[in-house]
Length: 171
Image 1 (cartoon, one colour):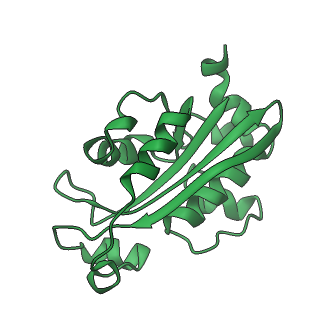
Image 2 (image 1 turned 120 degrees about the horizontal axis):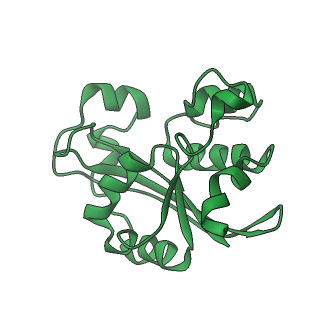
Image 3 (image 1 turned 180 degrees about the vertical axis):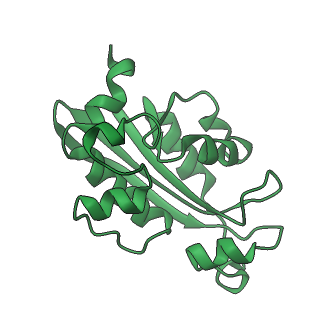
């Protein structure tokens, strides 16, 4: 199974906001082993202003984003090559990506936040930063797309969480 783990950073939380950063990590799952097949991370200059709360979270300013564009052929290729897409808040990322990346519309999406019974595993909540801290996973640069994607991949590889998340797809 080919699993694409994705994350986005945006200008805010409303339907009028836009993606400013995308990261995707394509993995091949063979039993319990995960092998990287490809990855892409890129920035994108938005046509709207960045909400100050969003900028405080991810640290991306208009000056850092000026002139930046995602390589949409590489992004689309990741979605075309995967069997399933995993995001930690899939409804959020999917909403933003479907308007920007047509290839993402036909993909099977899984949510690692809601698709795993974190409390039954002794976790107080499903927030990514809390989960990776609990599992002693280096967060890299928290709330940046590729750091969050890599941390999520490491988290899912532990304790058979990926089995729980993909059970319905693989059945």
